[in-house]
Structures are given as C-alpha cells and as structure tokens.
Image (cartoon, rainbow, N blue to C red):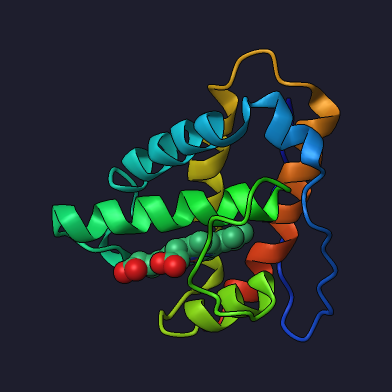
Length: 147
Ligand code: HEM
C-alpha cells in the first residue's frame, strides 16, 4: 500500500485524528502492537536517527515498553500508558518531544522507518492501515520543533 509522507510547512495548522480501533484489532491487539513497535525500534537503531535514542540497552528497553504502551492506548486498547499523569496523551507527547531537537528530516526518517515496519505486516485491511498512517503522518508534524 502507498503510504505517503506529506511535507510540513512552518505555521501550518495541523489537523489529526486518533487511529481507528480497527487497526489495533487488525494487528492482533496488545501483542501485535508490541511486536510492531519492537520491530520498528530495531529498525530505528539502523537508521540515521539512531543517535536520538538511548544507547544503553536497559534504557532502550524502557523506551520500547513505553512506546508500545502509548500506541496501544492511542489506538483504542487498554489504558496501559502511565506517563502522561492525567494529561491528554497527544498533548503530553508533543511536550515530551520538546526535549529533543527534531527537524523535518528526522521526522521523515522516523516515518520512513515506521513505514518499513508497517509494510512487513501481513493481511492488514487497507482502511485500517490508512487510518493509523494518517495519524502518524499528521501528528508527527507536531513533534517537529526545529526548523
Ligand atoms: C507520530 C509521531 C510520534 C509519536 C506518536 C511518538 C511517540 C513516542 C513515544 C510514545 C515515546 C516514548 C515516551 C515515553 O518514554 O514515555 C517516544 C520517545 C521518543 N521519540 Fe517519539 N514519537 C513520534 C515521533 C518522533 C519523531 C519524528 C522523532 C524524531 C527523532 C522522535 C523521537 C523520539 C525520541 C528521541 C524519544 C525518546 C528517547 C528517550 O527516552 O531517550 N519521535 N516517542
């Protein structure tokens, strides 16, 4: 499936919707989401944004766990992401990424890496996948804080 990365323009208003729960169900719920996110992070370590992430194995494992929990919750699964402390999850995530200097090039690499992991999924309904992708493509614009 053709998952397009749309470009960001400074000052543009970003609209996004959370992914439909269909995607979460299509990949096999919690277990499937963890598998996808671990595969994604293995690829991140081969990517040119690897230096953004902890090099220590235990710290890296924590990022994988928290990241998986976030995506389980944002896709309509159980509320397993505990870090936001009552804040809206997406707002918390934008704030969280402010600690890192993320530019459009890093965003494109992040999305390209995620796309590779998504392309390895088998028998996923196209509409469900598209809903997940649209969230990533749009929401990721709000993690960019360096121009
Ligand atoms: C749709 C867009 C994105 C979402 C939903 C997302 C989500 C997340 C989540 C859930 C975490 C773990 C948070 C935690 O520890 O509690 C995380 C960590 C991180 N993300 Fe993102 N992310 C996105 C885009 C990006 C992009 C474009 C970059 C660019 C480099 C990036 C860099 C990082 C870094 C550096 C960490 C943390 C590593 C650490 O804890 O040391 N993210 N992200």
